[in-house]
Image 1 (cartoon, rainbow, N blue to C red):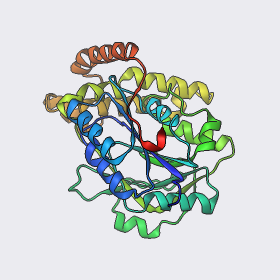
Image 2 (tube, helix red, strand yellow):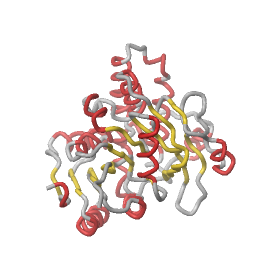
Image 3 (cartoon, rainbow, N blue to C red):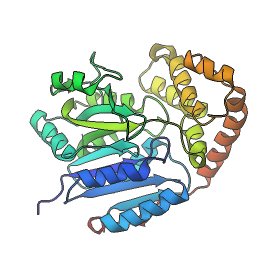
Image 4 (cartoon, rainbow, N blue to C red):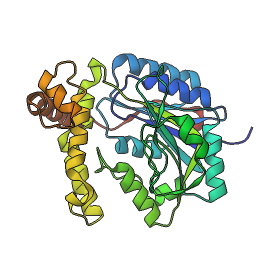
Length: 325
C-alpha cells in the first residue's frame, strides 16, 4: 500500500456542535492510508468522549487542551505531527466529498501550487442544500449562490487566497513561513497566511472539483463561552493590530470597523434567544453594536476564559496514532 502524501488536520472553528458529524464525514471520505491529526481545544464532555472513542477506532492522533484555542494555535499544534508532503487543514464544522484529498493533491501537482483551495459551500444544517460561499478571491467571490448555477462554469485557476475552512498546503512551504501567526486570533487569519505564502513565491490555486460545506448556526448552550471568546472584541482587536503592523497599513485601510461589526454579529449568536426585540431588529439591519449583554456577560466570559488559557498548560496527546509513534 502506498504511503499517505497528506496529513489531514482538523481544528476547532467557533463551536463543537457539528464536530462529531463533521469528523465522520472526513473519515468516510478519506480512505487508507489515512493520516489524521485532530486538535480538540476544550470541547464539551460528550464531544470529548466521542472523539476519544473515534481516535482509538480509526487510529488518528488526538491532541487536547482543557482550555479553548484560537484556530491558528490549533493549526500550529498539529504542525508538529506532520511528516507528509502536504497538510490539509479543515475546520471542525466542515463536510467533505469523496476523493477530496486525491483531487486537491492532483491540483497541487498539476499546477505546482503551494496551496490549493476547494470551492466553499455554506448551509445551516445537514438537511439544507448548500449555497456557494466562496470560489476564489480575485474578482470571483460568489456568495450564497446556487451550486448548480456556479460550479459548471468554474475552472481550475490561480487565485490569491484560501479560506481557512479547508485548504491544502505543501508542508515545506508552511514550515518556511514559520507556521501560522498566533496573534491572528479572530479575523483575517486566512488573508495574512495567503499574502505571506505568495510573498515567498508560492502560488494558490482553486480546484472546483472539490466542494466542501461548512455549517453555520447558533452554538449549543455548553459552548456559548467559546463563541464569546472566539469572536471577542479583544481577540478581534489583537488580530487587527497584528495585520496592520505586519502589512504596514492603517486599520481603516482594510475595514477594521466592519471586522468589529462582523465579530459582534458572531458573538450575538451566543445571546439568542435572549436578545431584545430591538436588538434583533437592529441585527437584521446590520446595525450591530455592543449590547448590554455583550458589554457585561461577554466581557466577564472573555476575562474568565483568558485566565483559564493562561493557566491551562500545554496540549497533551490523548491518543497517538500508530503512524505517529
